[in-house]
Length: 585
Image 1 (cartoon, rainbow, N blue to C red):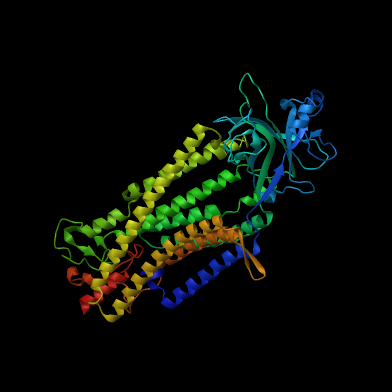
Image 2 (cartoon, helix red, strand yellow):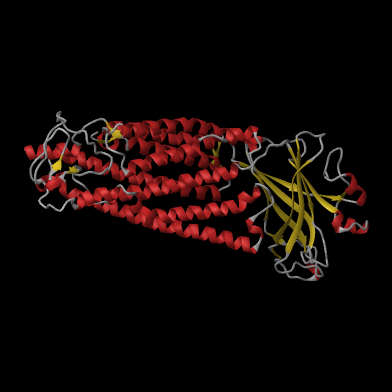
């Protein structure tokens, strides 16, 4: 093998490949922006106040806010006081979805957040650090006549964070506090058509339960689920991209194994990157449509974590391998200072004048193929990923058995979650700074190599200038991909979710998801394609057994290597041929 494809493919073919990848990238953004609907939908619910008398408590467990078996309702707490109904006998009922609608497995998940409407009263104000105790039950059914089946039941606490923006006087009684939204429930699958929530606020003066929380007037819920249309587009993309990445990965590794030498570290890391991309692409979500797999959210987070950890590690190793001192050629070192250039050649004596082998450059080659060299750089990535994994397990792992659990509900949980996030953020900042430093070092080394170009013949000078340009271009594409991820994420957060373009509506959030997902697939595809060993050889020499002798130091200044994937012990590499031609001249 004479080198990697990025070195030996003609500029015309590389441009064609680049244009094709750009077209696929544009298509990925267009699929999300013009075809797919918005990724999620938010539905607002106002809880209905049902009365739970002793008789009803014995006859029925679940309270329906509407329908043929709807509960006995009251409009306000003033009506409850007039009817001498205690607070412990009031149940807030919410039916999901709204009347005449159904939930679907295509919705994938269901996230519910809560907000209290609390009126200001001089004699019943919200105390500092007030905690609301909630007795909540969740039930489901798949038709309108069946009995409700309990899915989960729990006693939860949520800390109130409310502000009263006006003066606390009698004249302002009845005005509402401004309260923050509270995490309430998250379900990892939507396998049933109808869901019912029954919420109680038990009061116990002796145990100080729900005392000092103000006068609660209403409970509002916001249900968020993934759009079914977006889910279908997302599944279709995964189904299309999975075989694409799998085929290029198999093709890449087959080219590596055809070489008689063992794979070098960079080749192994590129292959591992392809495996992680394939792992995240496999559309196992199709099974969630037919099965009640509540762990799909957690599984999706783990897959994304593995891919991004592998991607960050790849960037470090990719830069590190090219940061090693540039080698003018690679060879097998023999005893007595001899250098064997190929299997068919006789040893070239005294190419290395010193007898204390190996030389520094060959020591670099030994170091650069050891993963342990990068433990200081990869260690923070692994540690930060582990912190995020622990954080995810502390919340979504527990939600597998209790969908009402939230790590943010308590002070200890909030501090623990913030600690995990801060540690991961510090690791990310350190990684970014170190990566920028490594990229700067690589570009400086490449600029230093340009000093040897003027002494070359015109053909070789143009060839190496092309190699340097291609490598720099690949580094800039890498930085562009990372920047686009951050930019589109910010845009998706600050805009209203869609733009109007003539008669078409562009869903920005959907375009962000499909475009960035397609971009990373195309990036991994391009890396495996461009860094696969090439079957071409640069130069006009036809002999594969050419023997190179002479003073290596006299001509080594003309030989530059930018990739670590071009060595093949079955015959001379491109660099060998360059040195041989120079020696003959």
